[in-house]
Image (cartoon, rainbow over all chains, first blue to last red; front, side, top):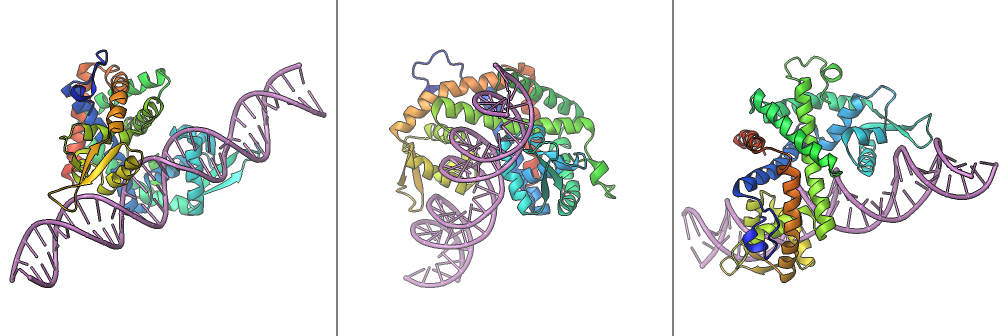
Length: 165
Length: 165
DNA sequence: CTTGATTAGATGACGTGTCAACTAAAACTT
DNA sequence: AAGTTTTAGTTGACACGTCATCTAATCAAG
């Protein structure tokens, strides 16, 4: 991938990746891919829930009892508005969340957990947290955890500064 | 998320995440999400190409001239067989790749790049590599890059050892 | 040689994410 | 107050990933 030998006919100014850099880049992409797939599988098996559904249930469960607005949910999760909207529609159909018009703003929706939603996340959370701990934290020393956090923060900060991400 | 206060009614054995751990976990998920979104956007804008299409073009471009078999491609990319199959169908419709029956095995397909495929990845590669470098490598010191690689390898090794991932 | 198991790959259904376009309610402007 | 602009949220089209299922070719016993 990104091989200058076959691809770089004359674009001398491009700073191609070294062998070590390619290793890190490959590892990062596989990590990114595999992480979400592992999460999804664990939740699907143990709780009949997708990773994104869990994320929404968890976010709403931490909101004040009157509910969260859909847009705030999008901000909390760093998701697109329409992504939230599509998912909420599906989750409402499964009776995991409820929506009612906000009193203060005629456009807004207040999202709350249904009884089934509460029951679902209560029973899913322990297994999910255990899986996260075993997958991410147990294999690393505390120092490594700190290094990882620092590195990722550097990357994300630089990206947001450039308006990307 | 994963809040013991509201969720842990009686499951005392679960090792919930500390505040620091929650930070790392949040950062990891946003990283994983944001990385692929940033890649996809850059490629869509500059080369009218999705991230997965680029990955396939790059992998096939490094294969021997007679082509790669679809299953080998899946192994190289660590992807599902059917994921590769679906994507190849779409890419063949766009005339980015070609497939012809393998001589040795009547079931197999030899995948090659079309002229348009070669042209596409040749013109897309410099911009893509530049974006990867600016996003991932420039914000980090070399020491940080090594720490990041080590940490991710630990996580992935532990996961594959447990049959996950 | 034939039967059963394995392998390569394709396919359909479904949930999902993204983009652009849309509706309707607020907020702002004059 | 009337018209304009923002804002909240929805919708439809499309690309994508996953799972289960399917077909056809190869391989392994017998």
